[in-house]
Length: 274
Image (tube, rainbow, N blue to C red):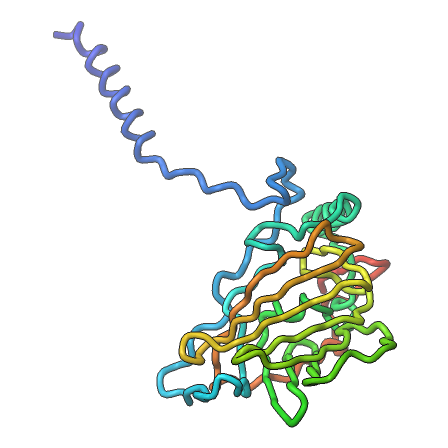
């Protein structure tokens, strides 16, 4: 009998090991990296899956008028990268893709490059429309105004007029709009090159051109914004992405004073969290 003990013990050990391996939790998927790179320093910042929830029960309903966009809206999902799909970079030309790689590596080393927003300047476009802060929309004759909580950025959309012949480049550019059925079409140009396309650091030039198509969906409880980006200098081709914003009449945009005790104030071109 004693001669069988080692055999039984070994068999039991094998069974135990196999059971333990079978019950071991699956490894977490590898974080998204720029262009599926093997370099961990090119890991992308993960998205925030939900920024704004639906308005709480009992909140005021949205207007039944599809052309009435007034009120407070809040983006439903936030991503650092603004490509054609989650985790996909904009179609940057090789030299600008290398710049993006440099910026992502710097971020992952803990020394992100400073940009306009860390110095309390406007976020630029289309990046501003990705901000995870509420937006109040106000409509007046000939104009739609988007009042962003973040850094008090304000976009003025002038209706049914052309762009001025001579535009002085600015952080948010010049935006003109028109209604096509129940869709507000916004054309933005005249942007300077001091901002990024997105929070990961994709470059754009002063020739960037944006077209947005904004409409109400889901019985007016959400806004859909389809944004098409064209830049013959930095992009190989135009591309589009879509963002949605929740109707939030219960939210009152708060004061946002970036200049006071700015915890991201850059030092020597590097953003330093304080």
